[in-house]
Every structure is written in structure tokens, then in C-alpha cells.
Length: 173
Image (tube, rainbow, N blue to C red):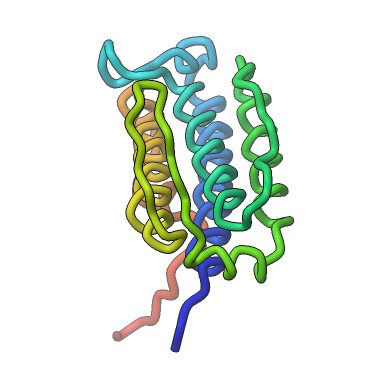
């Protein structure tokens, strides 16, 4: 059985972005928003707002690169939970709107990442997705979770994996 590039990208990005959006609802019910937006894990790390923006960018840019299309432009202007939730929703709509066949054709497409310092990486599409895009995406997702958790928001593993829904609990098994 083979698994498609679409199957290992879009649903994973969508699930995590929906979870992230729900974390903001929980955070808003427990803590003042202003106390959380600029929170970070270390002085040299970006704050919560940037973690959401970078997770969004990682998802939409990965899907666009793999499909050979332009990513939806989204300037980093969010300054509230509502705006961060809207960004998650726009990112979800974009990645879900990309043709799965276009993504599948990207498995062997060359992806070149160039950085401002002159460094670059070259990948096949599949290697880019599994070796860079997904790990980079989850770095920002996990950092956002850790910032909220570290600030006292009552998040736990069920929130990180809430896309799974409640577990099946069968008595006696």
C-alpha cells in the first residue's frame, strides 16, 4: 500500500492547525489574552503570535511548493487570538483547496530552500516534506503549545491530539 504526498501533508497540517485554534479558545477562557500573545520560551525565541504565524507559513508553503503553485500571501499582522484563529482557518482553507493530484506530482519535484544568509537546501518533494516541512511545522506547533502550557493554560496531551476525538473505552479489555 502506498501513501500519497497529500495524505501525509494536508490532513496532518489541518488537524494540527485546528487543534492550535482550539488551544486559543481554552487559553482565552483561562488567562488574559494580553498576557499570552507575547509569551515565549526563551529570550532569543519568537513569541506565541510568531509561532502561530510560522506554523501557518510552514503548512501553506509546503503544500504550495509540493504542488508547484504560489502560496497564499499572509502578512504577519495578527495581534489577537481572533486574528490568529482566522489565520489558522485561512491556512486550512488554502491547503484543503489544493488539488491532491498536483501534490502527488510533487513527490519527485526539486524543492530548493534559500535562506537570507546564503545557505540553501535541495530536496526531492518527498524528502522535503518528511525531512524538513513536517519537522519544521511541528517545531512551531509544539513551541506554541509549550508557551501556552508554560503560562499556565490547562493544556494536556488530549488537547494536542484532540483531532482524534475521545478514545473508545471498552469495559473489560
